[in-house]
Length: 317
Image (tube, rainbow, N blue to C red; front, top):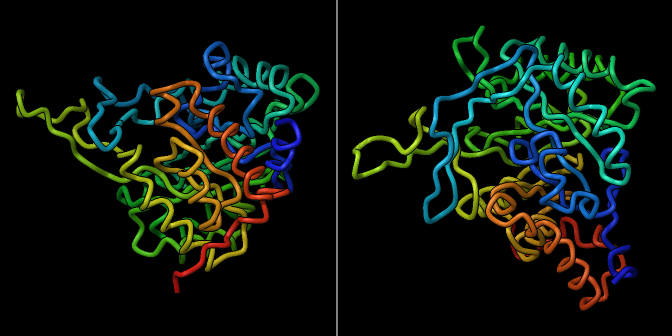
């Protein structure tokens, strides 16, 4: 199996991942919270929980509810803020996961706030926290409060400026995370690419509503939330295929992945990396199992490197 696992190494945005499986933002916390329940060193990478300029209390409880097709959540980007992340979380990331690629998920509510967070994180990536982060994932599904709440990803000018400023703040790779609710996700991907993104994450959760019929109230304290899990799989795979045809950047496909078959769908559609989240919350061994099963699939099909199959989907014009 060691030889088979060597077939899983991939290159994306100038980084080498030992395999394509990455824990998605919002589910991996800051890494150490999962260290005793998930075999993190067996994975290709992880994306941290959100990091914002200031601490955020987040949405009211309950924040998560399950339904037959997956999960809906409204966490509200709760996080301790960039200063606490620098102080409390980066040192552990630097020391504990040398073989795993680490991206920080960055959020903001004004055009310049994303770059502000990145600049603050960069200050800690010297000797004390060297190796803590390999790059960043920018969540442009956040509402721009200075523009009436429109998502940055839905406003080409704002999206371009967010990415441009973030690009100026770091030499590390930047992935831009796009919403499946965008009217033209391929166009938004092109805007991000032109502004300096090194990769794209597809997709964020899709807006939804789950109702507790006994109480006749929303299942979540916030009311609506983001849908993830099995129901999101075909949405994310289609977005990946569309964007792959529009831009040449490496893609991280996320949404509904719980098996190697699911991961292979994203890879065939054009993703180089595949994120897992909801499945890991239900079964912490699921990501490790997907890595194992991908290696077996490559061995059975004579695939010497899994990058060979990226974007090889046939039969769709």
